[in-house]
Length: 198
Image (cartoon, rainbow, N blue to C red; front, side):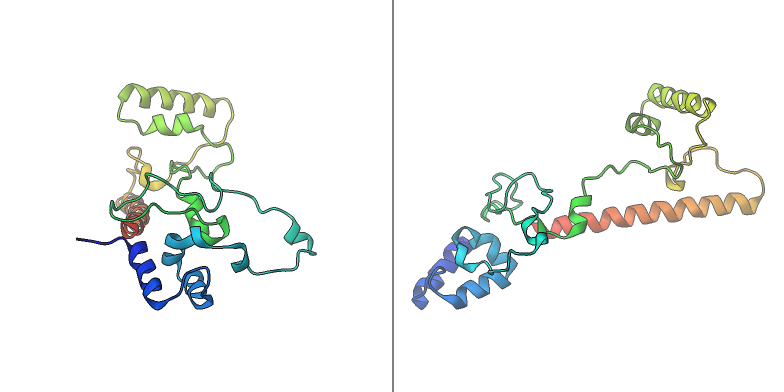
């Protein structure tokens, strides 16, 4: 029989004769340990927040809200493990900066200023032959209209590899391999991080 982490934590507090709201030591340990803060953030009070001077203009300006839910909201249904309690949203400042970039568009970014549209980029590498041809025609029409040449990242190139000399073709192949490995490593790092959450 397994016990809930929060129930065990509360039981240990009761046996010690302290409650989270009354004991300053417990409040300090909850504030310093992010795992316990996630579990026990619903018991936090206004007295736990540090009192700062609000006379500066930076303190009065509201920070830009990035998350879709306010801090303290119980996020139901997104827990990886059945046995654990649903997580509670933290303030935006407590999340790492790279976390907000996880959901950005991962389609190839082109190096020239006129970017191809998201639809063209998606269709250019589609499994459907018709979509690939239509996207290639749209891009060719844009190039003919005077838009600068569009450069596709090396690991997304599936054709038009240089066929001149052996050295040129090998350099292009190695560049594509390096770019592809870097992209795969980034995906593996993300997958490992998400695996550690559960």
